[in-house]
Image 1 (cartoon, rainbow, N blue to C red):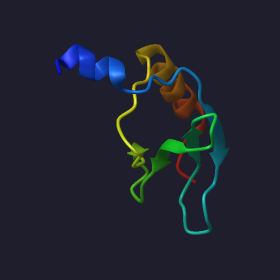
Image 2 (image 1 turned 90 degrees about the vertical axis):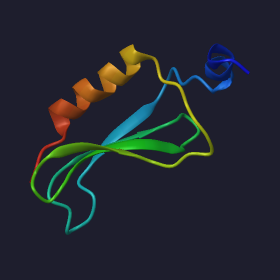
Image 3 (image 1 turned 60 degrees about the horizontal axis):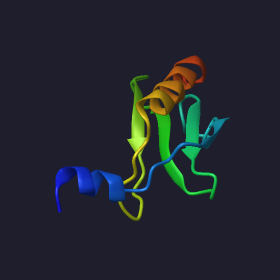
Image 4 (image 1 turned 60 degrees about the vertical axis):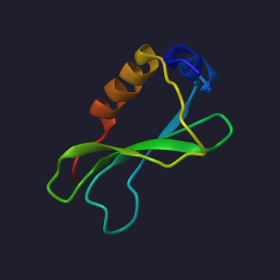
Length: 85
């Protein structure tokens, strides 16, 4: 199988749902949780203990493809809502 064939066989995600959360009591900020319409979470944008914003990629059943434009929208939203407490 060639690289293009591999790419095209990986599920393409064109729509996601997201919500902002404060996590649990010990979490130092806000987070953006991103999930598929099925409810499966694919990533969180989080703040670590030093206040750095990071993308937490969640393990899935296999690889996923996301259009760059959708990923840019997710990251733009995260920059608005994910901040240290």
